[in-house]
Image (cartoon, rainbow, N blue to C red; front, side):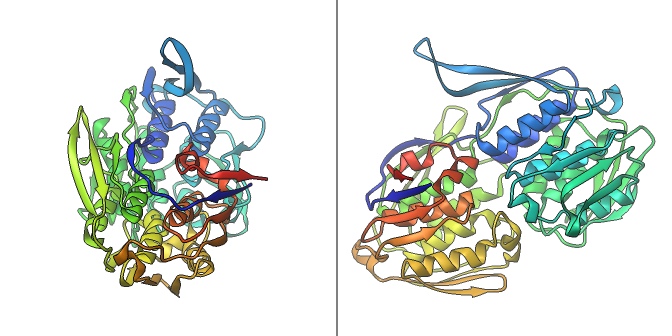
Length: 449
């Protein structure tokens, strides 16, 4: 599907959807845990639906309660009631699926559920869409094999992947170009049999804030573990169990970056609801980056979370940004750099090449189609922004671009169109629903077949 975004100003109040990273972690831990968990306001997107269906295929009972608006059923869901299988010390077991588990486009689901499935004694196979079939999980698979798991896969550690326990423990070395490998082991290892011990040496770790998020969940469950201060080593003993996971899911800073960028490019103001400035999500750093670029960012207290205002009255200014901890910000940072005066460097983010697409190459290619001077580097991008932003004039001429089946690329290009001189036509806009259902409607896009 194609979509056309016309240049216009974005203002007003926007409620940010729930965090995908939090939603999937809570769902999997609730599925593996004891009793019934009540997950309130989860993200209802293509990726989280993939995780939901994987859990159901493993025998987890999940009920969905609809949102009520004015006494009538509204869109989305209000909560998920998850009846866990009681893996770990509780002794629960998986239902053996009768076909491969399809994770769709969700890498988070693939890697985290893969390690969880390795706790069982029956073979379980995972598959996914065309992009997932190109994403290697080889470091994780080697680590699982070192822990006694039987593993088989397509070449380069791609799906279809089959794992079969039992988890025997041991010491493994796990380089993590993506933090998902380490989060997978950290969530599964406490549920290994009593007497097992899993030691993980981590010689490379990107996206450290996601590990801090995972550890916050283990801490909330009172799971004991040993860890090096720099997350280069962990020891986790088996025999634990997870208690019910209750409460609302925090808003998603990764998703919030896109309407925030829209406010900065077009002037705003936009007011974003549902974000907790104390949350462990690494992508909350985007708001500090906006400040450095010359946008105005103001936080206000909003009930038990927060609201943030983003606007711009002067020109955006270029800067240098290390995105190692926040690789998902590369597409949106590349776009705002196109509107900033001078040369912006995005660096130390080579692992953005192993996401849904090679985001470094893709963003360089598509921004050039819109007339932006861009230099692709091994670990990032150099972008020369236009001077039109100082006069509140468009700096992009408009045109046609391709989203490459990557939700963050599509949303970034859609935001870029808001400040252009003419409409931008984007191929593959439907994938925005992977993490942000309704985003393109928010930008008033025109869909075309």
